[in-house]
Length: 338
Image 1 (tube, rainbow, N blue to C red):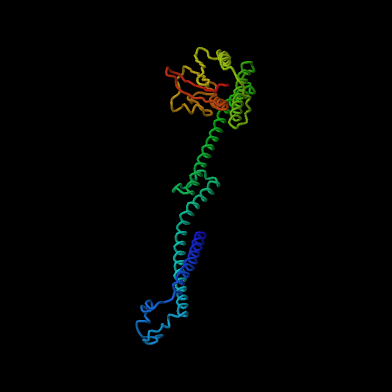
Image 2: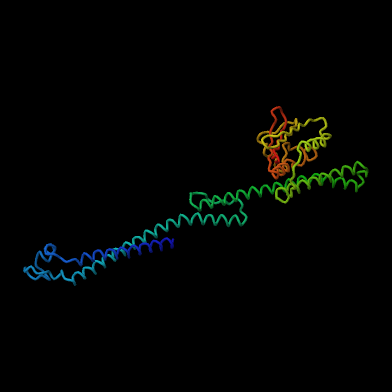
């Protein structure tokens, strides 16, 4: 407000100085011009008697001399200064009023944004700024709210991840604890089958930790890739052959084709498929379509999250869908090398 007022005052002062100088020069030239008989006949001194008159003799009026012109010049200059000072005062008042209105309009949102920022820094994660208006302050408030929403989503995701990890670790740890206590109390015989079950639980824990480490490294950019050309047809045959014994009586179709410089790998099962509203969520960590399935029957829920992360590191994409003839369909697209 003070800056706006000072700028307005400076502008008015400069304008007043220039106008006084210009007016003084122009009017001064008019006052210095000789007065003709015709001009003098129209003056009050020429139309009657009074102070300074020399009767009716037609002589030059006393008020038409140099002293009278100088007095008129001084009076005119004083009038001009008085008028400009009055204009400056009015302009200053108007500038102060406008500055006060603008200051109130800007300082209010700024105070609100400052208060919201302090509340957020103090731990109130639900604090949000008012976004009214279209000025720069409103843009800053919108940017702050977007940042706060993004941080809130990340914090929620971290909390959910911690809860999911705790849940996944709880089951095998509980089994291990129960089996070991039973062995210690003599309620369970120390036979190969018992140790085999304990070993399976330890293997589950090991795989979970490895999956989490791999996913964390990939998402944080700490995973080092040694990229090189690979014959996908050979790789697909090797992988399908290694998993064939685990398929049992079920059927999984694996297809590989190329299209416009892209390799497209499709994997289809004969299950219930993936609902449309779930097709993006299946790539979230620890997400399972069937909540009733445990890690032993449905995996940890990290597989597709790892797939998407690794595929994107190879500049590819992966999508989930339901096959028209039934079953889930996952399609991986990778760029072909030159």
